[in-house]
Amino acid sequence: MRNVELAVIGAGPGGYQAALLAAASGIETLLIEKQYLGGVCLNWGCIPTKYFLNQSEKYLQIKKSRNFGLKENSLNLDYKLLKKEKDLLVKSLRDGIKFLLDKRGVDLIFKEAEVLSSSRILIKDGDSSEEIEAGNIIVATGSRPKPLKGIEFDNKRAFSSDTILDLDYIPKSITIIGAGVIGVEFASHFSRLGSEVSLIEAMDSILPNVERELSKVIESRLIKQGVKMYSSSEVVDLKKREESIELNLSSGDRLSSQIVLVAASREPNVEVLDNTGVDLKNKFVTVRSNTESSLKNLYAIGDLIGGSMLAHSASYGAHVAVSNIAGIKKELDYSSIPNCIYTDPEIAYIGLKEREAKERGFKVKIAKFPFKALGKARAVSKTEGFVKIIADESSKVILGAGLAGSSVTELITELTMAIKFKIPYSELIDVVHPHPTLSEAIGEALAILNDKAIHYI
Ligand code: FAD
Picture 1 (tube, helix red, strand yellow):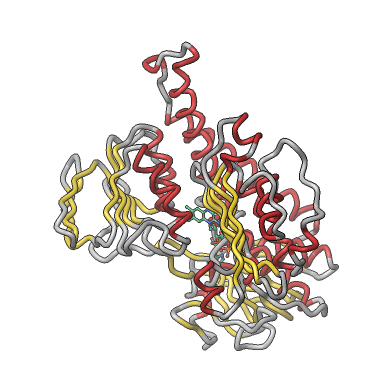
Picture 2: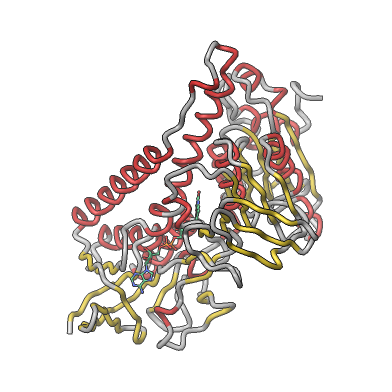
């Protein structure tokens, strides 16, 4: 039987980065992946969606540039080509990961794994199989789209967030079920390209996990782009026709569109641990703060443990797990993980929301600075949105932040650092922001917190 110091299962952002980090620390590492390097993030998530969102944003900008003499009817988008370019981009990034793994000396097996115990793994290959003995195991098998009862993904009329990325035409009309981040990003993308988009959400507003102040900004943009919203609505009945798909909603509305995208929720790929008896909660693996599961030396990270199902949470989990395996104590703390939504305008938020901070009894102080009061935002016509900081007046610590506007997914990092390291806003006031930049909005919000605002009264 083959023996390794560390076996990592799953090569998404959690798994492949765990393997690279471990190998860099001198740990003999085996990485087992059943499909593609990069996992959901690279192949069906972060990267392809941001590629498409960037292209459709450019398309809309060019379309709106008729004032500069461009004729709308001269714009003919080759979506097949766009999809091909997306595939090339993903492939080149996969090759990049392979290069890094090789360089670091990570041993790689492209097969399906099954964990037998906290130190043994079965590698399955058709009828044959091989057992591996490992000193430690990190399981990072991620998650998959959860189908809705009664809606089978046939990839002709009904698509998942994975298969919609292989579409090589712009649908005339699309119904998106689920207005969480994934649903809203796709609604943004297809409406920019001219599809008639209907967005269905069971809760009473889109992006139910986001402060209403923020989600309203993107809601009004989507409505402007023609997206029809159906909140507090669930699909009660669905009929697939040759050319369309028809849905009846609990609200009484009846919709018909060319295709449907189900983006309602995701479920963990936990079957890999079926034979271990490891502790689970709602199918997600429960872990201690060091990312170790209920079984010694068996670690779990990323989407598989739920909580924060984001690529950077998975890679942060990799950092924590590998550090602990290497003997450096680290604790997983999801309280300062930034959340980003790549619509236009973008949304980014972190930490406590205003309501949560008040419920927890903090002496809450709010600072809100609108981009329209900023020179750079005016100069580049990016005036929509605001920076909102939620702080505790007693300790002067920043508890949370919510940003809507251009490039806020980049700007949030400054506040992430402030929250992570509990830097009081009375000290942050001395941080100089370059002029003219959108980052000045954060400086202005900090000035408001310190009762030193001069540009906004
Ligand atoms: P995954 O990326 O899911 O990787 C798990 C890997 O394990 C897969 O490669 C799988 O093949 C492999 N595997 C599973 N079972 C086995 C087995 N038994 N044996 C061997 N291998 C196995 N997050 C962000 O932070 N930013 C974004 O912009 C963003 N956009 C997204 C857009 C979409 C449409 C979706 C669906 C997700 C998006 N996410 C985004 C979420 C992000 O993709 C995930 O949080 C992230 O990929 C989770 O990483 P992971 O390593 O836990 O698992």
